[in-house]
Image (cartoon, rainbow, N blue to C red; front, side, top):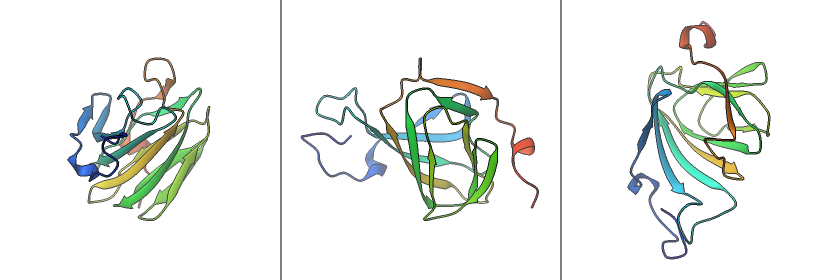
Length: 140
């Protein structure tokens, strides 16, 4: 994890963790405010979603999030609009915006997520609607 003592690292060195409520989602916490010497103002994750996976539609009461798509393709939902996403795209959700990211492609969807301020999973995230791939991905 990035910190005052480790200022450069390959994000793939960070162990990944699965999220029970988000199918096919692997999260690597590159910068975590709970680690001494790490940024207290933001969280940086290196995320991977396997084909057909994604997260539920949700919002953060206090945090804004920005995603930089590195590889793969998918769909981004934000406040009622669904947009196809590809490498090089940047997605943004302000506090209170209902959002969702899903992998509708054939390969892993890989991206960085910056959350500012770092969200508190217990108090800041409100799930609005459970993930349903068939319902949320536009037909090709």
